[in-house]
Each structure stands twice: as C-alpha cells, then as structure tokens.
Image 1: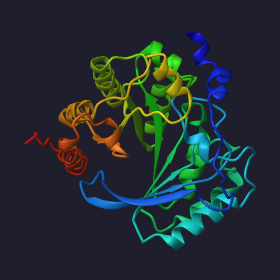
Image 2: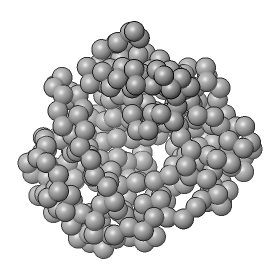
Image 3: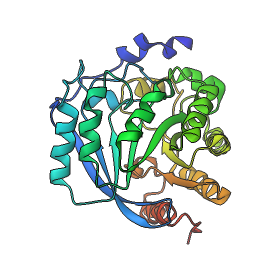
Image 4: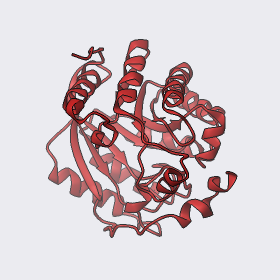
Length: 305
C-alpha cells in the first residue's frame, strides 16, 4: 500500500496537538545510564519545545508537543535554563527536540553560543538529528561546547522496503555517510532501532532488529537503542485495523537486547518506556522489566529465573 508512505495519508490520521509553551520544555527527566567509561551515572533529558519536524515518519508521535512555526531566537536557551533550574546537578545531558537539532527551523544557529554557555559544566551533551542535517553545523556547535558532543541518528531498520514505507526519506547509505562524517570529525554517534515496525511478523521483527544492530556497529555507531514500536499517532492504529501492524512482545525486546550486548561491539540499550504495553504474561512483567533494566545498566546478560 504505497499510499501510506505519503505525508497526506499519515497526516490525515492525526489527532490534535498538545498545548505547549515556546519558552518552556514540554518535559524533562533524569535516569541512570551506563556511560562509555563503564560508570552508571545520572543522565538528564530535556524535551525541547520547537517547530514540528518537516519529515512525517509513519511511526512518529513526537509532533504532538511541537509548535506550528519556528520558536523565536532565545526561546531554546530559555527552555534549557528553566529546566536546569528544576533538575538536580548531573554530568550528562540529552537535548531532544522532536526532530533534528541541526534543522535551522528548529534550533536557530544564533542560539548555539548561549546554549553552549549554559552547558559548560556538563561532560557529555547528546542531541538528535536526521542524516540530512548532519553537516558542518555539527562541527560548529561541537567547537563551542566544553562537553563531548554525541549525536543520535535514527536508523530505524535496514530492511530496505520497510525503511522506505516508514516515510523517513533516508537510505542506509545516507545513514552510513552521516556516521562516518561524524567519526572522521571525532564525534560519537548513537542510533535508534525499531523492534517490529509495520509489515513484519514477530520473528521477522527480531531478525531485522538484529541485522540493524549489526549494520549500525559496522559503520561506526557507538551505541544502539532498541525501541519497541508503539501506537498512538493515528496512523499506527489504522495499520492495526488493517492487520499490518502488531505490538511486539517484551520477550522479543529481551532477545534483541541479549543479542546486541552479546556482540560486545558497543553499548546496547532497550527503551523501557511503558513496557507493560508489550506484555503477554502480566505475572512475569516485573521480572522481565527488572531483567531488562539490569542488562541496560550492566551491559551483561541476565538469564531468566
């Protein structure tokens, strides 16, 4: 069904956006994460409020907390300053903006110096970007920071047909070129990998997530985050009705996490947000969540009890 790869079809199934304040982030949190050093340390994430991403990926629901037009110069530093005043002191920070940090319509380059100044006490700063925005702007921002810059790029899947249907407007070659550009310039990258995107069976979802991890590490990615695909954006619910999408099982997430950690090629994390959605055996859910959290933090396998 090629029509679902088009923006019009995806947009037609959306609900309404949430009300957001361009001078405040729509959320922030602090969680523990294993660092490259092997230390387990608190890491903060600020979810910046800004203009909706120009790309309309099939599975994305991040548009719900975005503005319809670019935020003014000064708004993003104001959001960061506000969040830093609320949260405890940490060494590592993720700035996620529901799109690409290096999209000028999302984060005005004029704000880079003020942002860098606000982040002067951090050891690590992680931002996210689509491959099409990976260019000299990354180096410009890196050179302003005291912290180490890392960039997260969504690979999603290396299944060529599924990747096309996700409407991400990217190829595996685009991804490879972006990672290698960053590597040549001393910038580490991490990536997001989807577990069971639409049109795949449960077993196919596992296989293609594993293949995607293999590819990511082979081109130079340092860290992979496996994300079980959810509904919630309208389009995914429509695909459920058409029997083209099913939620993955938490046991499949465990399997893929075990595989990635077993490679010992870099850090591999499983996204742990709302894992109850993927449970088929509620009596084992707490045990499964504990196991996933253990593997995330220790990067070691933990056999089921």
